[in-house]
Length: 221
Length: 344
Image (cartoon, rainbow over all chains, first blue to last red; front, side):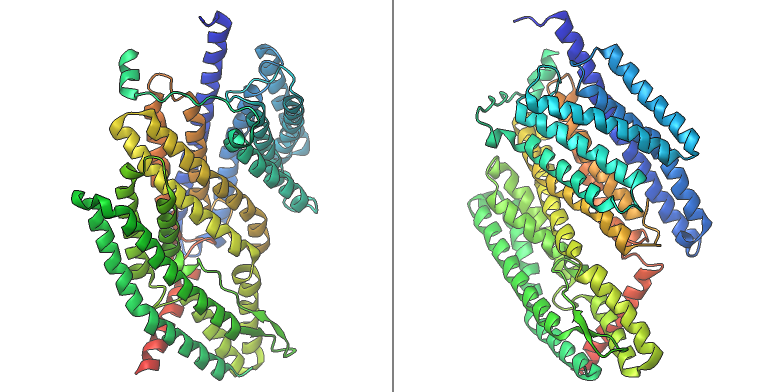
C-alpha cells in the first residue's frame, strides 16, 4: 500500500523530532564532558578548588547552560507523544505558552529554578493526560513504537523523568522529596521495563521486523 | 572492646586471606592468559565456551573467598561509641568496593557471556578477551586478595588507634568511622547501586561487541543483538543512577558533588545510551545505522572513561588524589606496611 502524503509528512515530523532528541541528549552529554574537564583542570591548578567560590560559580553556570536544554527536551517530549491528539500548530502554541508561563513565573519569583519548576509542573499535567488516554486506548496519542503496553511504558517513563526533574529543581529541601522521588523512580523503572519487554507479556505479540543487510540498504538508497 | 586485640585479629584474618588468595590471584592471572589465547587461536574454537565457563567458575570461587573475608571482617570490625561505651554496629563492607570493582565487573561479564545465546559464536572471542583483560587487571591492579579493602582497613586502623588513645582523639575517630559505617559501608544504597551498575557495565560490554560485529558485517541482526544487551543494561543503570540522588543529598550534605567529574561522566554515559535507544527507532532510515553504531561505540568509550574518572578526577564520588584520595593512599600504604611488618 502506498503511504499517503499525510503519512509521509507525519513520518518526516517524527524523524525530525527523534533527531532533535538525539542532538539534545548529545549536547547535554558534551556539556557534562566539558564540565568534567573543567573540574579536573581546576582541581589540578587551584588547591581545594571545590571549597572555593570558583566551584559555586561553576555550578551556577552549568545549571544555566543545562536548563534550556532540559526545557527543550521536555518540549520535544511533549510534541512527540500527543501529536495526533492535537494539531501540530496547537501543540507548538501550547508548548510555547507553557514556556512563557514558566518564564513569567520565574521572573516574578526571581528564580530560574522556580520558573523551571512551574514549566515542569505544567508538562507533568499534560503527560499524565497522555498516559491516561494511552491506557484508555483512545485513538489519539501517537508513538513511534507499536502496541498499547509499549506505548503505556513509554508514556510512564517520560512522565517519571518529568517528575524526577521536578524533584531535582524544586523539592530537594522539601519533606515531599523522598515520596515524590520514589514515585518518579517507580514510574521510570516500570515504564522502561514495560516499554522494553512489552512483547514478553503482551497477549498479542507484534511480528518482529525482518533483519536486513545495511550494505544492500545503503545501495538501495 | 580491646583495640589492640581487634587490630591483631583483623591482621591475622587479612594474612589468612593473603595466604589463600595470593596464589589464587596468580591462578586467575594465568587463566586469563589461557582464556585470551583460546579466544585468539582459531583452532581452539571448540574450547571457547568451556574455557569461559571455567573462568566464570574460577572467578565465582574467588568471590566466595572474598565473601568469607567480608563476613569474618563484619564479625570483628565493630564500632563503639567512646562516650557511652555502647556498640553502634558492625561494619558490613559490600563485596564490590575499592580493590574489588574490576573483579566484580569481570565476574558479571563472564557469567553473562556464559549465558548469551544470540550470535554466541561470533561474540564469544570478544567476550573472552574482555573477561581475560578485566580478570587480569582485577587481580593484578586491584589485588583484592593480597591487598584487600585498603581504604576501609586504613580508616578502621586509625579508629582503633584513636580508641586506644582515648579522650578527644577517640571521639574524633569514632565520629569519622561511624559516619562511614552509616552512610557508606552499611548504607543500603552501597549494597544496591554498585552491583546494578556493574550488571549494566557487563551488558554494555557485550552490546559493544555486538555493535562491532554490526559494523563489520553491516547487518541489522547484530544491531538487534546489541539493542537487547543495551536494554538489559539500561534498566539497572537508570534505576541505579536514580537512587543515587536522594542518597547523595543525605550522605554528601555540604560536599561538592553537584556537577562533579564522576557525576558528569555518569550523566553523559546515560544520555548517550538514551540517545542510542532513540536513534535506533529510525535504524532503517538512510544512513541511520551508522549514527546508531557511532553512538553505541561512543557510549561504550564514555563508559570506560566514566570508570577511569573515579581514579583521575577528584570529587565526592572519587578515589582520585587531592583530598580524600590522598588519605586513602596513605591508609593503603600504612596497611601494606602493617602486613609486611606482621609477617616479618
